[in-house]
Every structure is written in structure tokens, then in C-alpha cells.
Amino acid sequence: VQLLESGPGLVKPSQTVSLTCTVSGDSISSGNYFWSWIRQSPGKGLEWIGYIYHSGFPHYSPSFQSRVAMSIDTSSNQFSLRLTSVTAADTALYYCVRVLGAYCRNKPCPTGRFDPWGPGTQVTVSS
Amino acid sequence: SYELTQPPSVSVSPGQTARMTCSGDELPKKFAFWYQQKSGQAPVLVFSDDANGPSGIPERFSGSISGTVATLIISETQVDDEGDYFCLSTDSSGNWVFGGGTKLTVL
Image 1 (cartoon, each protein chain N blue to C red):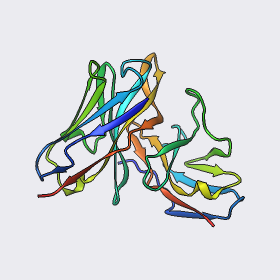
Image 2 (cartoon, rainbow over the protein chains, first blue to last red):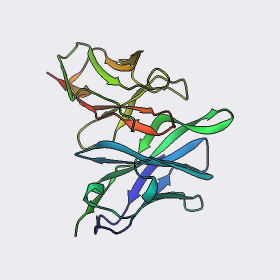
Image 3 (cartoon, rainbow over the protein chains, first blue to last red):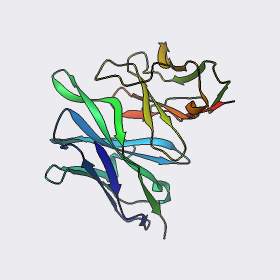
Image 4 (tube, rainbow over the protein chains, first blue to last red):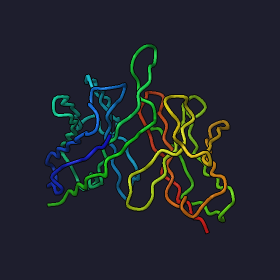
């Protein structure tokens, strides 16, 4: 399985950035996997943004809850991130990642096995 | 918000054992995962203390937990093990949190 992020690169403050992750080598619907976004900036290290299951049901970090949305398109084998009201603090390298799932009380739940990662796409917020 | 605390740097000589810590209040109840990131590359999972899925992790990498401190142990450390190491775990609400990372230097 390989993941590849794509996005606009440069975004103006207060705008919305949309990123897409294209999955190849397997169906995004197969197996018990979650699909996650993580970002990395020099000042804040790795930050988990959220994840989504192949049937939906996103779960977001409280740090991003108010301005993030994730979606999944099984027909295109892609999942997406939408982050609104961006500021310079959102400048970072954004990774998409597959997360191995398990079953918690008979429901799918993510483990901490984040693998594989995409190479990342740089998002720079600047006017 | 929940935090995982890691020392900024650790140094070790080749062939010796490296130990990197990660402290967090939920660690006695939650699994810890460890990622290695080399310069210019995406992180790679090197140790997991849960029992889900296949291992595929080098045997030189192991882990331990004592109270609120999880430790990644690298035996027979090699120069190629240099990089940044991040711990990962969840808070009480199931939100994933990364530690700030530890830079491992082998010299």
C-alpha cells in the first residue's frame, strides 16, 4: 500500500486548505483500517489531526475540532482533509497515514500502528 | 490537554544500549507506540507494546513501562539508528497524542 498527499502548497491566511490522500495498492475499504492526517512543524513536532473509518465516522483532535473536516471517497480510493480559517501556525508538512484497526467492545477502533505514511505535502500559510 | 514528555536528546556509543523515556499520566492504562524519524523521511513504527497485528519490528528494539514512564530500549545501537524518536499514546478520550520527540545521537 502507498499513500500520496496532494494540496495547493500555498494558502492565504483566513482561507480554507483542502488536502487529498490517494491510496494505491489496495482498496481503501478493505480490512480494518482507519485513515488519518498528521502534521509536523518545526515548532510543534508531530500533531495528530484526526482519523476516519472507511465507512465514515470521523474523530478529530480537540485542538482542531472546530475547524476541521475529513471525508472519504471509496470510489476514488481517496480521503481528504479540510482545514478552515488557517493562520501562519498551520504552516506544516501534512502526512496522510493508514492506521491498523482492532475491535473494542465489538466495534472497530484504531490502534497506534500508523503505517504506512505518505511522503507528506507542505502547506505554507502566507499572504 | 494531555501531554507526553520526552527528553530532547540522548547520546550513546555504538554497540551500547540506548534508553529513551516518555512520561504521561495515562500510560499505566494505555499502550505506547514508538516511531523513528530520520532526516527528511516520514516516521516509521519501531516498537508497539500492544498485541495487534504482525510484528515486523527489529528485535533490537524493545520497550518497557514503569508507572507513568514508558521506555524505548535499543540494544547494540548502530550509527544507522540515529534520528528522532517519538512516543505515541492516547488520552482518556481516545485522542492520539505524540511526545515532543528525542534526538538520538550515536557517537
